[in-house]
Length: 221
Ligand SMILES: *Cc1c(COP(=O)(O)O)cnc(C)c1O
Image (cartoon, rainbow, N blue to C red; front, side):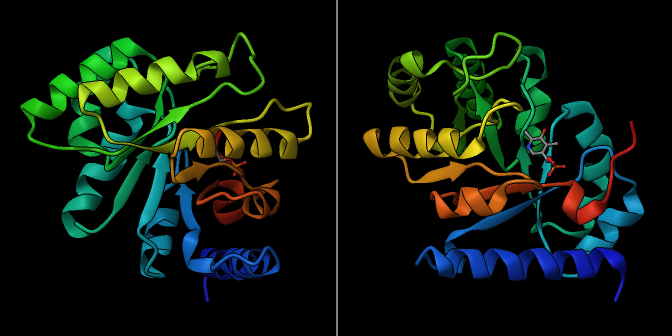
């Protein structure tokens, strides 16, 4: 077995155990394999294991890597997990299957217009800046209700919420908070948890975990 295949089976086993310990069904949790800044060979190793759900944080890098791969593997599901500028919306809509980083009304307008152009309906997650960090993208919690109402009104499919907790705080507080927000707003999906904290996220209701380093090793700088 290749190192990558071993890592996938290890993480998946770990996900299953954690879900069962939390009395959740393992099938409820999707592993989004974060392939940003990883060499193509490693992505192919992952594809060989049968894995099909991947995450990228930059539109331009993702196009270069995934346009060719998607021709060979049309069942790949690509998640955008980095912030999206409105001038990249056209390319993002052409490539991604899920957008996890919706965070402002202007982006709702751009996405709705472009999805109409391309005759697509791409599900979105709203990214919530649960730590209210000035340098981080995501809507602040107090503004979530307005943004959600706006997106729903515009016809966007909002599937759930996503967060990246502040580095120096216990992530579980943020996961629990995001979970509460999702329940309040009747949203069924929760994208939270990365290599270092995905077990906690699963225990607190994550339906999507975003794991890079633990699957592919340390990224190129
Ligand atoms: C890079 C990235 C990840 C993966 O982080 P790892 O610690 O390598 O698992 C998850 N989520 C987002 C938004 C990222 O940018």
